Image (cartoon, rainbow, N blue to C red; front, top):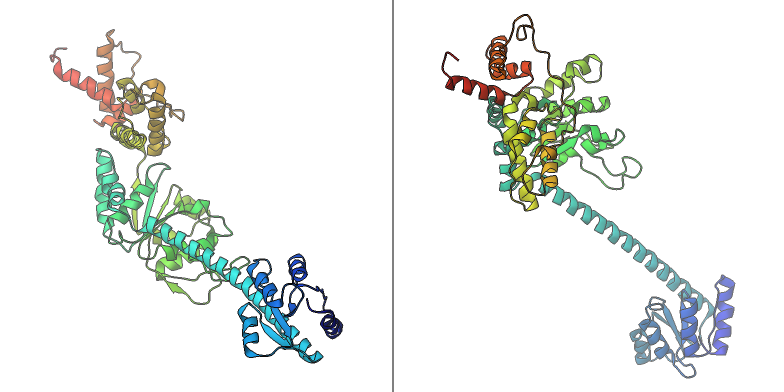
Length: 481
C-alpha cells in the first residue's frame, strides 16, 4: 500500500522474517485488499495516486471489519502537523523515509505483538464479562430463590402457620397443641413421622413460621431425590476446583438456610456416608464444604421427616442410631386421615374452596351422596389424595354441583375388618324390620368397642355419621320402641 520502490524495500526487509506480504498501488486498492484479506498490520504510504494515505486510513477506521487493524504511516515528511494528522485519523506509528531496515522490522514486530496482545485481552475481557454476567445471574437467581424461600410474606405466614391447618377433630387439636409448644424450641431439631401424604411438610412450615426463626429462610429438601454423587456438595457446598466442573464456589443447603430452618424430608433415605456428617452439624453447628480445608459455622434448625420404620432401619444398619436420637429430641407424629375421619368433610370443602378461588369459579355444592362416598373411603393416600380428588371433581363438574360420578377414588378402599362374632349371632333371630335390626347391631358394636364410635363404625364397616344418625333417631323414639 505504498509506491512501487517503497514496496520493494519493505518486501526485502520483511519477507526474510516469514511475514506474508500483500501490496497495493492505490488507496482504493488498499481498501479493497484490506477488507478481503484482513491483514494483521497495514503499512500505508501517505502519498498515493488518487486517494492519499490519510483518507485511506480514515475509511479503514470507519469500516467495522478493518477498524481494529493497526496502521503505520510511511512518509518523507516529518513536520509535526503532518504527524499529528496521521495519529488523528487512526494511525499507530510513523516511519520516516529514508528508513533503516532494522527500524522497520522492530516497529512492525512491536505493533504486531501489541495487536496480538490487544486481541487476546479483548477475548479475555469478553470471557470475563460473560463469566461475570453468569455469576450475576446466578447470584440474582440465588437471591431470588433465597428471598422466595426465606422471607415469607404475611399472607404466606398465615397460610403456613397454625391457621393453615383445617379440621375440628380432637386428633388435630392435639397436634396443634404440641406444635405450639415446639414452635418456641427454636434451636432443637424435630423429627416428624407419619404416612406419605399426611402433611408432614405443613407441620414443618408451621414449626418454622411460629418460631423465632420465622424471618429467616425455610428451605425444604427431599433427601430421596438428591443424586448420591452430588449429595454432599448439595448439602454442604463446595469450593472452586473441588472437583471437575467446580468452576465457582457454591453454597450448600445448610449455608443457604443459615438463620432459619432446613427441612430434610424423607431423611430415612439419606445415604449412609452423609449421616455422620449430618450428625456433626447437628452436634457442633459446623460443616466442611467439599474441597475446603477450614470448617464453617452455621446457625440452622433442622426439622426432619420420614415415613420409614426407624427401628427396622437401625437394626438393618441402614440408619445410624445416634443420628436418630439426635434428630428425635422432639417428635411429632402426624396421623393418617382414616384416624380423624371427622375432618374429611371440612377438608374436602376447604380444598374445593381453594381450587374454586384459584380457577375463578364459585364454590359448587357437594351432594350428600358424594360426601357420603368420601366419608366412607379409607384414603390410603391421606390428605394429599383427598386434595387431588377434590381438584379433579371440581374440574369434571365444570363448577356445578359435585355428584358421586365426579368422585374418583384413586385406590381400592381397604377391606373392612370382619365383624366380631359377638355382634352377629346367627342362632339369634333379628327383627324383620331393617331399622330395628340396624339399631341392635349398632348397640352391640358400641358395647364391643366400649362406647368408642370410631371403633364401632369400623366393626360395622360404616361411617360415624351413620351411627350418629341412628342414635339420634333412637333418642327421639319412645323407650318402648
